[in-house]
Image 1 (cartoon, rainbow, N blue to C red):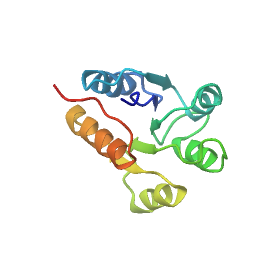
Image 2 (cartoon, rainbow, N blue to C red):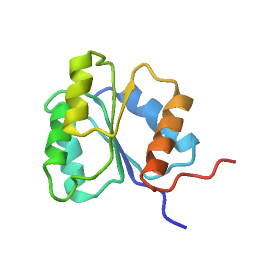
Image 3 (cartoon, one colour):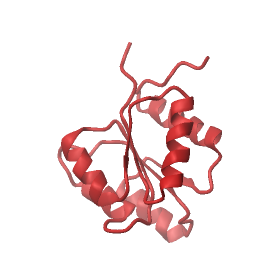
Image 4 (cartoon, rainbow, N blue to C red):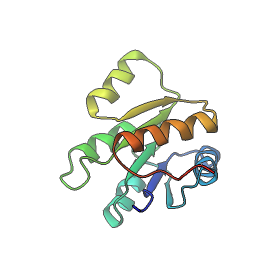
Length: 134
């Protein structure tokens, strides 16, 4: 059986990271890292490859969209699945994220169960393993 994916959650709001992480842990994921901005996300990616990035748009130092562009231009991490979880809803911004190469776009506020279902769908679509539901 394949190992469950390593997941990175990047959000400047500690409470949002906690909500997302606890929803994923409850669903059976266990290898979850956190970053407080895009800069820290990139630093941690240089040390450890992740199978999925869940990232906020608006963060200090480096925004999620800038981190996404940097990741998509990297030879090493170009294909890492990237999900934007954000309050940004303007059509031009959503289009900008799609053009930059996101895999999915989730609007805050989120319901943890719906969030986990979306994450599982994304992973399955990419042929990555998900926890078996009890």
